[in-house]
Structures are given as structure tokens and as C-alpha cells.
Image (cartoon, rainbow, N blue to C red; front, side):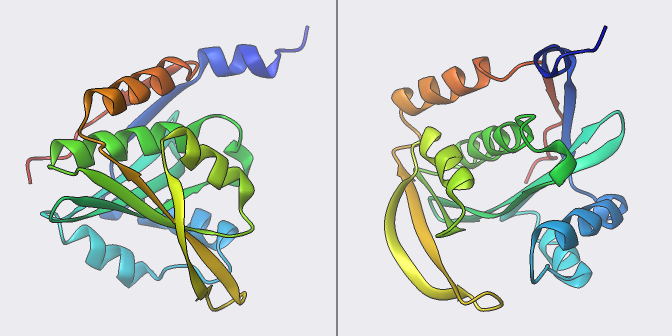
Length: 187
């Protein structure tokens, strides 16, 4: 008897751990699969060195890195710098788990709003961000120079409110399986 996708999702355990140098080979493997102009290894290393203003997680399943995401803090805004999932792991709620962790870290660090840029043509990502309360508020022309594609700028406001906490709780309760989170060390 074949195992259905829904059953596999219910049994799925995803670990979110702070990104470390030892994860970068796996991160780069995903990076080159999903982005036409991937970040360099040195860029990731410089981001990881900025612990007071950055948070990066990797998502692991049975020890294998299947996704990652990053956050940059500026005063009271959290800026999602990157989020990517191995194409083999799409539709397993890995990005949802990562974005939940980033949003909660941003709030814990004093964010009142979250922002990000997303390709105008990436409707699936935009749908995910809307679930998190992000709304479109501008366009950055030719932001993605490698494809001459515009970026849609999206913001989520009042993320420090009780209503937003309830939104995150609802999203988390809709994610099947288990998510184990190792929090980053104190900033």
C-alpha cells in the first residue's frame, strides 16, 4: 500500500537550526538550484558574521538541509533577506516553518513590521506572504537584473500586536507534522 502525501506530511519532522558555516555547502547546493544569480559563499559567510543584526536558519529533515531563510534587523523592521527550499521539498510547508521562525525572531528582537522583496512573477511566494499579513506596497524596477524582473515590495505592519501573534499561532497550527526549533544564541 502506497503512503499518501498527506500521511507523509503528518509524520514529517523538520528541525530549524541556526545556520552555521558547516551548512553552507548544502545551502549553496539549494541556492544554485533556485536562483538565476545565487549569492556567493563569501556573502553568506559575511551575513553569518553579523550576529547582532542577522538571523539565519536552515531547515533539516533527517539531518539533510532542505531549506534556509534569513532576516536582517534594522531598528524596528525585520527584513526577510532570503528564503529558499530545495525543489524536491516544495509543498511540504518548509518555507512556512522558516517564515514563522523568522517572524517570531523579528518580534523577539523588537520588530513592529516585516518587509521583503519578491519577484513579481512568483505568485506562489506572494500567496504565502499574504497569509503572513504581507501586503504589496511598491515595485522596485529591474531589481532582479539577471532576469530583468521587477520586485514587488511587501510589508506586514503591527507584527508586535496580539492579533499578529494569533495569526502566527493559526498558521503554525495548520502546519502538519512537527517543527523543532533551536533558537539562535543571544544576540
